[in-house]
Image (cartoon, rainbow over all chains, first blue to last red; front, side, top):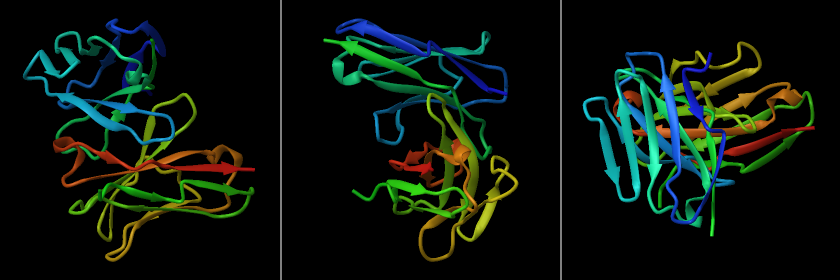
Length: 112
Length: 115
């Protein structure tokens, strides 16, 4: 079954808008939540990651919000640009585990 | 830039042939992971290896698929007697430690097409 549920499947925003991508999980043992960005023909690249001891983490225009009680986390992209058009994947794992569980991805299109 | 190197980038095989996918991890990384990505889906874990050892192959199909990471040379994902359903992008990732403690660095993948 899908360990990490991601929505929406696709998203279109105008330049300067703030796309928000949401993910939810069930396994309370998860303690590492990264987001990956993937451009066509490329492998996923780590964008930003958070651990459950904080509720928010910001790096540049990218912010992760984390709600431990709801078992949800989301990615916000401030002042989005056409160059941000890509597929975004959330993921989760637990310390000592051997693999990351990925969401199904969100294809973001930023219109100039 | 000594990133994760995968080859070939594209591979076309007829049904019944063998596919060999290669992955050289980042310098200094001894942990290698293989993931499969089907169209419009996320990445699914297949196998985790360290040098000369398979640590976790819980995501590997029971038949036709095998992986190795020899003492010398790249990690190899081998698919025997390929079928159309094996068509996918296969990504290799490496890390200096096991996943729970450090990020994965992905290669650009091998896109396998089975005709």
